[in-house]
Amino acid sequence: MDNPLSQLVPWQVIGAQVGFGLVAGFCVGYAFKKLTLVLAIMIGIAMIALQFLVYYGLVNVNWTGVQHAYAAHTPDLNGLWAILSANVPYAGAFSVGFVGGFRKG
Image 1 (cartoon, rainbow, N blue to C red):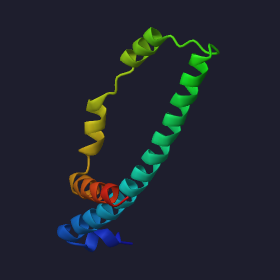
Image 2 (cartoon, rainbow, N blue to C red):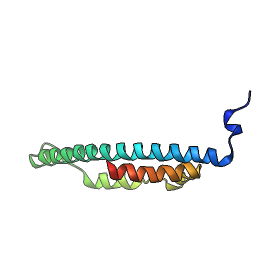
Image 3 (cartoon, helix red, strand yellow):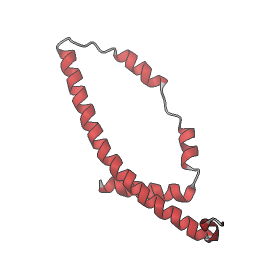
Image 4 (cartoon, helix red, strand yellow):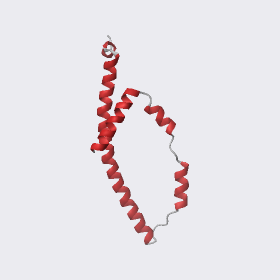
């Protein structure tokens, strides 16, 4: 049996990738913005609770230790670039859809 995609001309395959990438990017961008809002609210509440506990002397935060822990865990952008550049038509359409979904959300 032949693969149905083998009968398509290259621009149809690229068009399918771009279309799916655009829709998927929009959905992920929309969801990301909504989750970011929820996450920001949760972090804000946690910081207020932490300050409350520090103010009353129930918790002592070692901020120097926090700074050292943050400095030790920097993200690897080369690995991220390799992932994003693997499928250029899909990645480009996904990026455009992501921005649109993020703006709409």
